[in-house]
Length: 265
Ligand SMILES: C[S@@+](CC[C@H](N)C(=O)[O-])C[C@H]1O[C@@H](n2cnc3c(N)ncnc32)[C@H](O)[C@@H]1O
Image 1 (cartoon, rainbow, N blue to C red):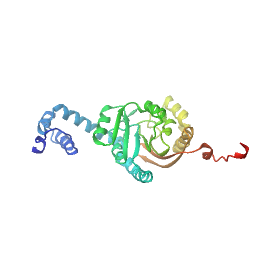
Image 2 (cartoon, rainbow, N blue to C red; image 1 turned 90 degrees about the vertical axis):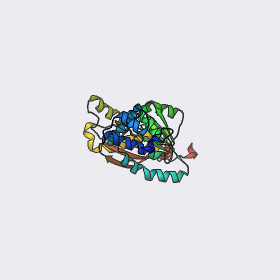
Image 3 (cartoon, helix red, strand yellow; image 1 turned 90 degrees about the horizontal axis):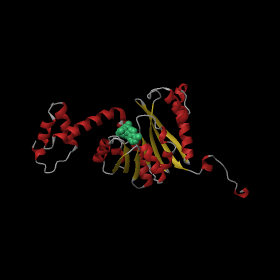
Image 4 (cartoon, rainbow, N blue to C red; image 1 turned 45 degrees about the vertical axis):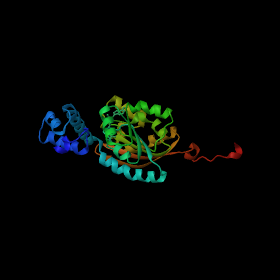
């Protein structure tokens, strides 16, 4: 207890967070009692416990371990190749499961529509700038400002369709990590059927060609932004697919394998 009460300025640490969760969940102490024990206010403890529990709940659906394992070798190799810190954009940073990974390699710009989640990322990452905004809209600003990133992570709960084609405009030489729900995770009704048709050319009967159709349409969206893509990996984790997509800026003539005959031009 002395280790807590001797603090001059109260500061949350990882150890303190796990102690507080244990006191609340296992020892069933009240917020007021925990607050007194560690030397802060009851409100601060209540807020912290709620956020930690939310983050734990979210982890069940956000699969941070699998996403990190997939990204790490790529981040390491691109960091070595470029020889400078990486710039990462997260359109859905959540509680920072991946922000903590990306921020080890350089700066991270993260969006989320929930302020608590932005606060959690900022508290646990050094090189993180968080903005509480709808990234679907902010993407258009970033594109207009001609911002470029080495890594872009699009990780929504639902379909990521509305981020295309513009998201490819933010990467000239780098990677897009993209989450796509399994077909049927989104409730199937007239709206979702039409959505799949319009954005991805997918019919309900296309279940076996789901990934292939997405890959084809991703290449078309990349083409609109004058980019060549290589889908290096697609893994399935629980009810989502995670795509690893290499993105390169390329002359469209080269992409289409056209030969320019300068003599006739
Ligand atoms: C799957 S979680 C993100 C998990 C996070 N990438 C991680 O690795 O831990 C999806 C997040 O998207 C946020 N969100 C939903 N709609 C959004 C939008 N339009 N713009 C930005 N964030 C959004 C939710 O609040 C939620 O935190």
